[in-house]
Length: 207
Image (cartoon, rainbow, N blue to C red; front, side, top):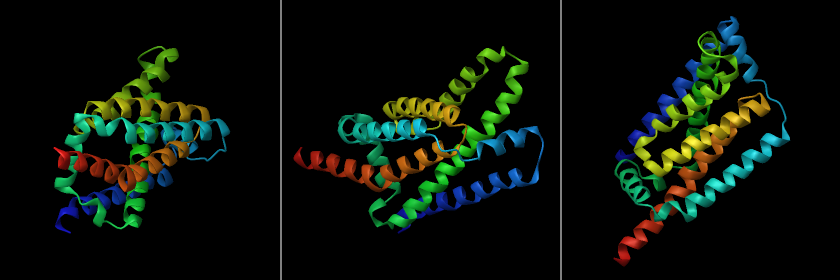
């Protein structure tokens, strides 16, 4: 149980951070928060749904087939085991945690930051390059924050971030990136990581 204190500490931090991020949306009504408010309007978009499902399937396949063979994955599993015993955490907590992580990170990166940069960058560079530059800058930043997961995962996260921005642009709503992020985090924490751990532990026993 002591091993999982970090998990529950992060759980608490993400819940509080998400609540704090939502409060300004209801209080302030200037142009910045009006842009943010529009992103939270849900729109049914079949193309975004198809792209979301397709990318999720591709990532799960890569996590199952490719990732366990990489040195960086073995290192990540070892680090993961030092700080967390995922098998002892009830699935409902992993589900709720994944939801708040997705909600919090997407509000920051594909909400607050994208709206802020869209207000600032057109005054500095040509409007024609603004969208592309914002997507690249935020995707690089988002990927670099996951450096501890190894090179393979950083590259994957960079590409996933670009895909999420594309989904955001197509659907004009932040909810598809949130749903994508939530499902992916839940699948990885509840199923993929335990599966990778079993594969890698099995290889260690054979040596």
